[in-house]
Amino acid sequence: MKQTCTKFFFCLAILGFILVEFSTSSCSQNTNCTAVVSVTDTLGRPVSQATVKLYANIPGAAVTSTTLTDGSGKTSVTFKNPAIFDITATQGTKTGTGIIQLNIGETTNTTVIIK
Image 1 (cartoon, one colour):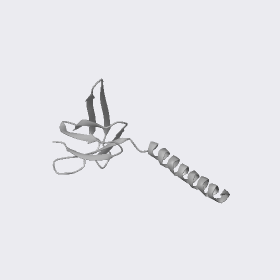
Image 2 (cartoon, rainbow, N blue to C red; image 1 turned 180 degrees about the vertical axis):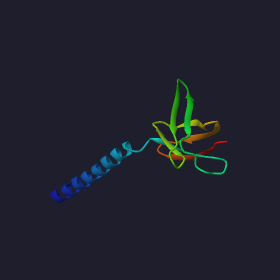
Image 3 (tube, one colour; image 1 turned 90 degrees about the horizontal axis):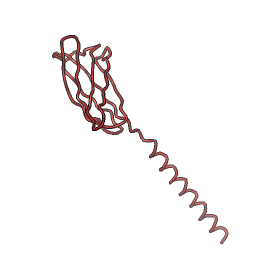
Image 4 (cartoon, rainbow, N blue to C red; image 1 turned 180 degrees about the horizontal axis):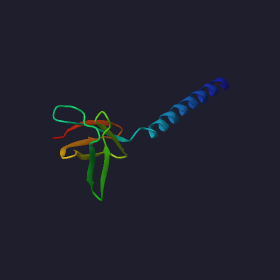
């Protein structure tokens, strides 16, 4: 009887450990939404130092981010919540527009062509 109780409590302890492990790992899931925008010219060449503006009109607030592309024509922005953003990219007198939908825990890539 004593051996049966010991096995029962041992199994119960393992089950408890597994439940705690699963419950804590689900709390630490990545919920950030990342937008990677590549800006190119009409020939497909990357455009560095282009100004990229992402903006969304969410009820009760407007979310906006403005960044510059790097030498490879890319910029990256991370948000805490998913949304659909309009994109405007400019360099000098050239402009381009686009749209991007961000999802929870994902990185979404898009390309904007400036003319």
